[in-house]
Length: 210
Ligand SMILES: [Zn+2]
Image (cartoon, rainbow, N blue to C red; front, side):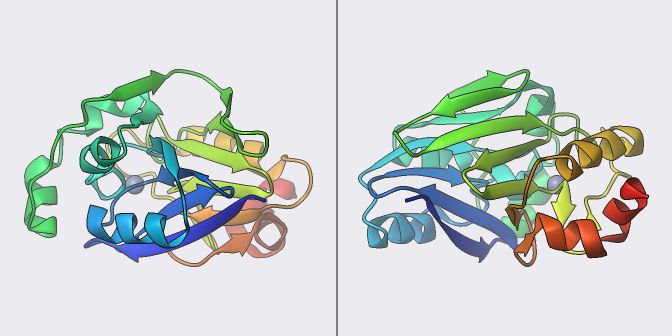
């Protein structure tokens, strides 16, 4: 059975997620200290961490990516369009975290949409959802939808940052709204919600549906 664990941490209160089946896990957006992530991995009984994924290249989602991927000898997957963001806010990030940022080494780029299968149950569909950043990703795992900084409970990600695009965001939100059925939405910050609830009550999504 696919399950998830949410960890909140870092100076911008990022949601780091561990998505896992009985033995195999994936870490999404490691903005939380590796010691905390490691404790969770151990408590969940995860034997193998197969991959670290960054939903986008903002520092609060990748700050500990290198340390976590080294710890588990797993690759960091992110969209190639966000590589340039990695070193951009380095000094601000180090100031806020009070720690050293390591540029990711074992990085695997993706450029389009793809599905990765890890175990019989654990399969991740990766959607390219630009808008907040050019390389923003959303992930579908079973009935979970990890939305990074694209979709939050009651709102959507900022599109006033360098590399943001409100037109791309609109198209990406349409892509999410049109996903068949309902999903548990695990956003990059704030509370967990469902896609149906957001279709009904999120003003940015409601606008697209009328
Ligand atoms: Zn962001």
